[in-house]
Length: 82
Figure 1: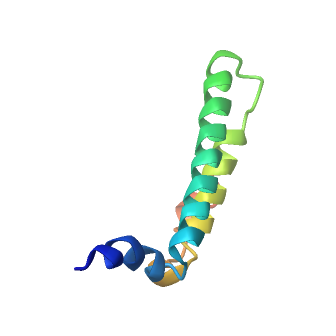
Figure 2: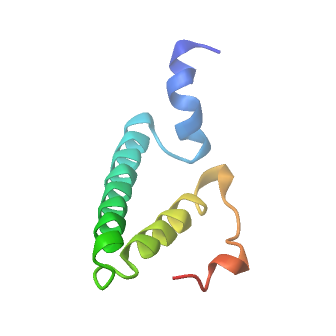
């Protein structure tokens, strides 16, 4: 495996360029940080952000499992969870 392909093979599998994948991964990371913050606040103040973290996680799951060669159908058991 060449050095260049180490950086481009995974992005290519999901139909992205290196920089496109970098942007998506940075966006994904920011959403995870937001979900973590909401969950932490919710842990101490359960009346706040009741479904925020789970909604973000569901959104991220849908975005990552419906792209490129890794695309799969969402398991029915996850559809109704808060």
